[in-house]
Structure formats: structure tokens, C-alpha cells
View 1 (cartoon, rainbow, N blue to C red):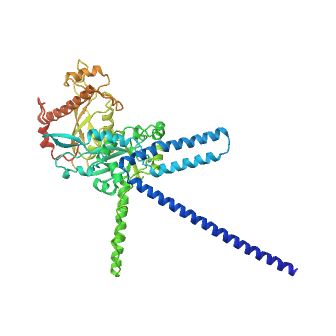
View 2: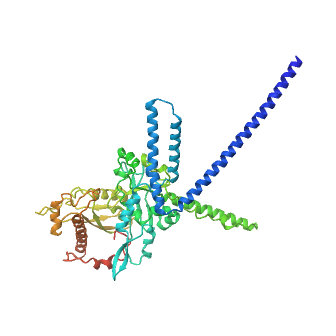
View 3: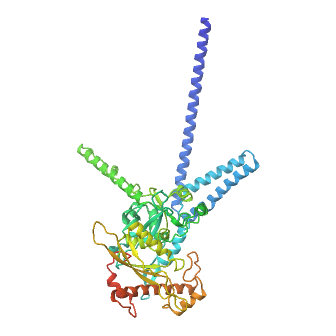
Length: 526
């Protein structure tokens, strides 16, 4: 029995010895293979970085074309291929073959390439829309043959909003406010059915009451060069008119949101959230302060610390240039958080179509309001919504006359007037005197004072002057009719203003006569 026990112990020790050798060999093999895989992965990463650096050296237009092809062609094609594979496997009820595995691998690789090169703003219709608007309206004065003409500004120039500050302008001009709408999905943040808040681009401040605001120059300085393109003057104008998007504030259609986003039918833009930009700026400043304090303490102990160890580099001071691909899913499912790193902006009309509320928010006491919105004049939907917003958000009461909205019609079928003047009152603040103001309002309405050809054109075109925005096929005659109508509207407001001041309507109004009166105006409202 003793010999048997000794033999068992010897066998157990041999097994332990064999197990130790086998386990050690396996661990060594695993680590060797992991090292090989790591070296291969490192080589692939270095190759990818080299290719990315080569890609960045390409011409900007070539890069944009390649990104568009990858995202607009190969990305959707890969998704469709994957869907077809799933449907085919389910229909034939068979196990995946080697070909299926290869195709799935190709789909994953294509998806990885799309994610790596993705720029959801560059793939949308916004860049094209911005270029088309800029080619028509973003111009500069130039001298040609002893005359001043308008020249188109190179689309590659980044026109910063902060450059339009009054102190930087050679000619004094009222402050520009470009109104957009920031979509919000946080429960209770906005009134039911609204899901939107105001967002304003201006040379001095940028942002809105819910998403926060900060000085425009500071905001621009915190962004990278790629991000500044999305908040430049042409971009702000294009965002202000981004009427078609999956998220459109109070006009959002949940049934169409997914299809619009999937079909890339969107003009809205993701831009850095001012709330987050300011927060990261504050955090970085606090870190710099703490590092400076540590440096002072170290210097007292005789230890020198290099400045590079204290100050952050320029890369750390820059906000991301583009929203990551996951924000496209937020767009598809309508997820728009106030505290998100990026905020989704669309047409200012998705919040308020006149810009009237923003002028009242800035305390203007004399406002000229031009209403060229769609729809017929008798419903006054745009003005009605603006008055309701001004009352609910600012406490401003606008006194509309009881007869307004039912204009008299001349015998030839045109309205006798298109303008009106209303008084409005700001709420009292801490017992201060009540501030009153005057609103001069005009709507695109054909009146008896318009030229004969414009009045006759209303019979040839039944929709004039209420063509929907989607109808952009303007003939020369239609364009001229709208131009003359706009000039008549401006003249009607000036006549109304002159009547308030002098108590009489002058025979002719010269706009230049009012230059001195409005030269020191501090906002677009005055």
C-alpha cells in the first residue's frame, strides 16, 4: 500500500510538470501571437495615418468630391448589400456560405471607411444650398471702369460674423441678426408641440435663451478652422433658410422624419453648442490656472517648469470640426438634447418667421417689420404666432387694431393698403417706468398704389404674391413683380413713419433723408 501511494504521488508530480510545461508553452504562444497581431495592427494604423495625411494634402474640391462619393455612393450601397444578404438568407433558409462571410466582411469594411471619412454636414444638401445663396447674395463692392459694381466673393473665404462688428465697419450700419431655430427634444424645456427654441447669429453674440449664448468672437476663436466654416456669414444665412429638414421644430412630421434623414433630404446643420463650448472653455481655463499655481509653488522650491508643461496647445483649445456619425442617428430618431455637444439648427421660421420676437428681446422701441411669408393675407398666421410668442416668452403686449386683418378691397380686386402701425408695451421691471414702442408692419399685398403691370399680373398669376417657397421657377416678369412689390412695401412703411412724425403723408419719401436719424441705431429693429 505504501509503494502504491508513492507511485501515485510520482505520477501526479509528472502530470503537474507536463501541465506546467504545456501551460507555459501555450501562454508564450498566445503572447507571441498577440505581439504579432499588435505589430500588424500598428503597421495598419501607421499605413492608415499615412494615407490620411496624403488625403489631406489633396485639393479641397477633390477631397470634397471623394468624401461625397464614399458617403453618398459606397456607404448606401454597402447598407443595401447587407440588407439584401439578410433577406436572401432568410428567404432560402440556409446557413451563411463563405461568399456570404466575404460579402459581410466587405460591408463592415465599407461601413468602417464611411465612419472614418464621414461628415454628415458635407453629405447633406446644405453645402450646395450655401454655395448657391452665396453666389447670389454674398458679394463685395469693387470698382470697374469708374463705377462701383458687385463682385462675387470667393466661396473659399471664411467670412466671420465678428468681422461685421460696428467698430470694424467702415460704414456705420445697423447690427445684423440672422435668426435660426435650435431643435430641442428635452421634455418640458419647450411648450407642448413646439420642440424648438431661438438661435441667433450676430456679430456680437451667438446662441439662444435655452442653448446658451456667448460672445461671437470668443465662440469663433474656440472652434477649429473646419468648424468655423459652419458658422460663417454664408452658412448662417443658409441655416436661416433651411426650411426642409427631418427636424423642423413645430413643423416636424414624425412620419417623414426617418425617410427625410435616410434619403439625405435635409438642409439643417449640426453646429457646436454654445453651452458646451463655453463650458469646455471654462474648464480649460481652470486647468490652466491650477497648473500655473503648481508652477509657482514649484518655482519656490527651485524647480523650473517649462511653459509647454503649463499651457495647453492650440489643438486642445479647438472644438471638434464636425459632428460624429452618431448624430445622424439622433437626427433620424429626433434626439436633440440641450446639453449635447452639437445642436441641430434649421430655418428660423420653425421658431418664428418674422424675427420680430428677437428684436423685442433686445428692447427695440421702433421696429419695421416686412412680412413676405407664404399663405394669404387674411389669416395673418405669421404675425399672429409672433404676437403670441412675444406675450408668452417676453411679456410684451402688442396692441393690434380690431379692424386689422380685414383690409378693404378696391374695385379692381386689390387691397387699398398693405401696411399698419401698432403700439406695444414692455413689462415693468423692478418698478421702472413702462417702456413703449411702435411697430410698423407691412405684408406683401398688391395695392392700388402699385404700378399697373403689377396689378394686372395678379390676374395672370393667381398665386401672386403668395407663391410657396418650394416654387423657385421664377420668370423675369414674376421676379420684377416681386421686386416692385418690395419697393412699394418699403415706401409704404416710410410713409407711415412720416405720418406718425409729421402728421401728414408726404408726396415723396427719400430714404437717404433718414440716414442721420438711423445712423446711430444699435439693432436691426431701429
